[in-house]
Amino acid sequence: METTRITCLHTSCLGFAPLIFDLQPSFGFDELMRTCEPVWSALDADPTLPKKLVGLGIVLLPLILTLWRPSCVKLDPARIMA
Image 1: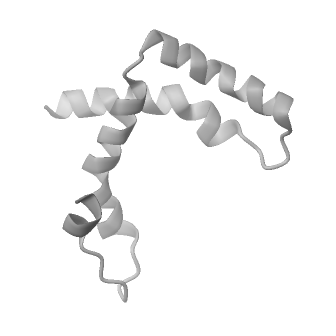
Image 2: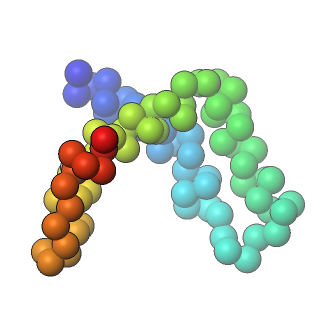
């Protein structure tokens, strides 16, 4: 089970890395389209990539909320994920 999650995380990060790390606020339309090309190639190779990314978000949400929320904010992960 954990191996599957790690594989999904790895695949999702590699597939969407250009949009996460290479996209700049100053980019115009042409630069945006060039940045998206590797993402489209990754999606062609693995059409389930978006589902993997969403699945990882659901799995990682409680961890993210625990690690990065201010102590004064009380968030209930059960309500967010409902």
